[in-house]
Length: 320
Image (cartoon, rainbow, N blue to C red):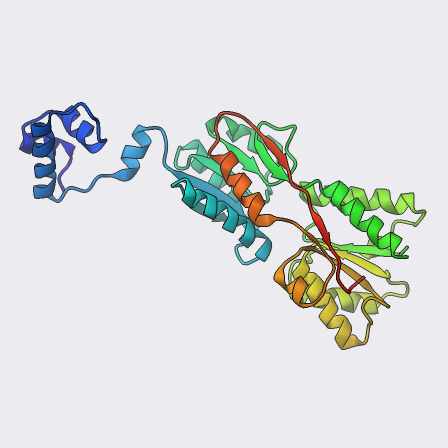
């Protein structure tokens, strides 16, 4: 395969002139430009686009870290990221981590080695101590409240959002309120846990660990929640569920088991996925596509660290 030196020799010009032609440099004599192009055609020469980009200090690639690709929450975030990437002529490198730290570090090392220009982490497993080791290599953008860190972020105030949702259920007459969440760890999970602990203390209820349901992400997890409720002597009268798909699983299973919604159990979901509309589930609407767009814009803005808080909206339906 011909290289740039072969092209220069065939065209009778310097390697520098060939490089200028490849990069559309304006100050090349037309006869020399034609000679280079003719030589490229004779050799069927194809430019190494990555090398051209790297010579300019960029790859036009943005890394995107998600724990799962098959969950609608992350699918909508990626949709927003991808739409904005396309508008700005960037391509995405997608990393599915399954919340394995080694896989997230692999993405961070690609930033370190200049294989990507920026890295968007939609949900992290690495500690801040690990993340901070890579911030000098390029923009890192987080989908969580990271205002005290050396990164950019687009986020929801999960403490306040969770508090408002719990207050809403309490104002509907519920004292015994539980919640369902995706994972025990993580910054967002900790904010929600603190909001819940503060809330039950404020209304004079005792903290009941049995009212917290972990690993609730999908429809089938909702069925597991209902089975646990049936085995309780004193079950909660309302559940705040941080996944509309898990909430849909709970509602469906309740109907099969003869548990009336909302008379016996009130349900409130999160995200306002289409399934929540179909099943008339009260939920909190999070504009995930808009969040993805903002994450992408932050990823290509390497000049400063910015932090954008996104508001949510209550969508009232028939389950509370």
